[in-house]
Image 1: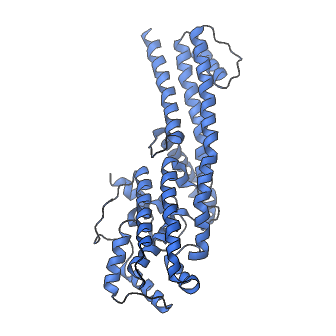
Image 2 (image 1 turned 180 degrees about the vertical axis):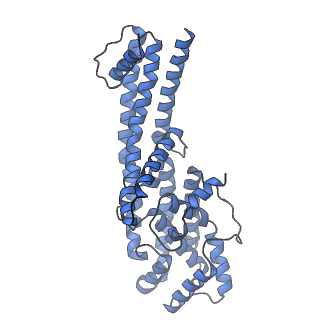
Image 3 (image 1 turned 45 degrees about the vertical axis):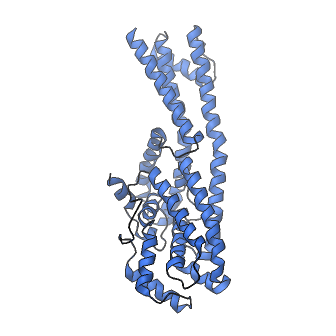
Amino acid sequence: MILEIFIFLLGLLLVIGTITSAMRTFVVPRAEQVFLSRAVFIAMRYAFNFWITRLRTFEERDRVMGYYAPVSLLALAPVWLILVLLGFTGMFWASGVASIEDAFKLSGSSLFTLGFIPPSDLLQHLLAFSEAAIGLALVAIFISYLPTMYAAFQRRESLVTLLDVRAGAPPSAVEMIERFHRIHGLAQLTEMWERWEEWFADVEESHTSLAALIYFRSPVSGRSWVTAAGAVLDGAALAASTLDIPRDARADLCLRAGYLALYAIGDLLNFNFNHHPNAGDPISITREEFDAVYDRLAKQGVPVKADRDQVWRDFAGWRVNYDEVLLGLADVTMAPDALWSSDRCKGKARELRLRK
């Protein structure tokens, strides 16, 4: 009798845990670290990593990794159903079903509403009805939230695609400033900072409440939401520190919205980074790299401030706010090479996690 009660409670806890996991993954509108969903994505990542190590070019690896997030997401539904099936198998056996095999068949019949094995008493009828309702609810939750995810994905990618026109492919903050200088005029950057400030707010909300979006890759191989974010943040940092133009508060607001969004996503992924860095902390960009960009902008006729040393200090003071977390996200999402982000990110995500 004690064994039956223990198995029943164990099965009940398994079912409750599965339902809670599904709700926290899709329904709860906030950043939640869900063990079951995380385990599924990690297991699938190991499988995909084993596959892509055999591929030679980034284009081949990118094509394969394009399936990683969708396949991992689709794997959640059968994992939930299997766990519910096993949980109710234990409860059916504890309620008096003769064998584990018969309890498994009854559980499967109830979960998939097949009805080929009828329950024998009131308790088993209640369990069967409950399992059928839970199975339908889990599938309904999964299906109903897929359009929400893809709507958020499309909102994200529309501005990433437009960045190709303004910053090249892969995106570069330097090229963005040069193009605005030649075509639009640097005064038109304000509109861009406004749009990207809203974009960062949307990405923070959507990618922390629906974490699978972090790993959804852009439709075009050379694009990535992470490298796009890095190019815009670097562009805003250059505008605030280097360009000899009137101070634009929108650039500052875009920078703050950007690194706060990256912080929220980095926290969700268990990155261990400094949320309050000092202006003098080291960054991944060297002074020589910055000087080369400074000279390139000046050569193109872009107005730059004369005090190069102060300009470097100001730029580094902005960049330090998002340097680590940007490289970690570029690494974990296997982003294509882009200037000052994914071109120097190898192993950064692992490093940030190992710091714990």
